[in-house]
Image (cartoon, rainbow, N blue to C red):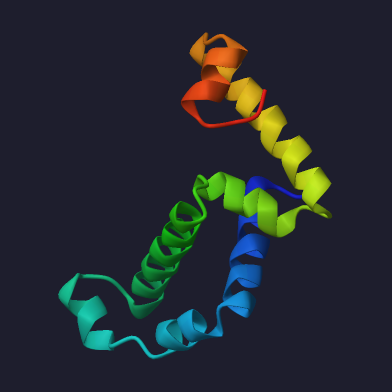
Length: 109
């Protein structure tokens, strides 16, 4: 079984394959911008990649973890099942009623 970081890395790799323009931008970052932030170019690139991933998730009305699941699930059905299971766990941890939680997050009951 893969670890969460392995799954996230797989999602990032797929994200970059699906968005070659972002990959190109990341490959051509200005090293002086990284230096101005006190970061290495690799750190700066990783931060920019994470921001682009988060923006894509937001554009799809998803949390970043949901986009990770979506990009790594074997099928759309598997994605929906995994997504629902995680949301149920979050609702339980928050002590929220499932129906109320679904309404809050625009999920189908």
